Length: 142
Image 1 (tube, rainbow, N blue to C red):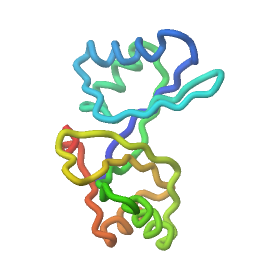
Image 2: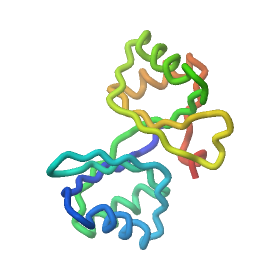
Image 3: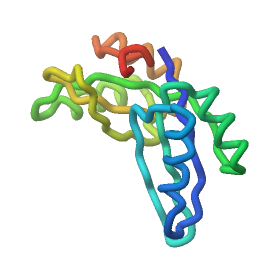
Image 4: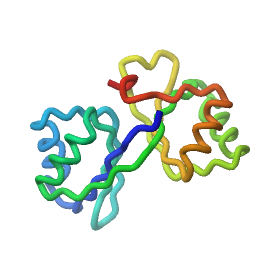
């Protein structure tokens, strides 16, 4: 149920983001979810790709620094307090959230979709399952 996320370290200069997305697009890699955080000197592009191995290979061929991490994609009730209830449950179970970001999908219905990076994915998965949260697979996203 864990997904692999690619984190790409980008210099904060014009054209770097366009270059990375073009390289991946030209290789036929679809971007299913992404988040971009920046500082004055660099940015971190986090993404879920349709083919992680191919994406990683193409990025390395173009000397683009990247790291692969395990994350979880979770459906959260798209209603006031939906996220708060889930985060409270995780907190009660002693699960630390390192970061999270939202993404969209064609099949959302009444759910918000979030990517979570946890300090301990195994512990987080047990807590999410106990809470009845739906944890998504790559096939669910594609």
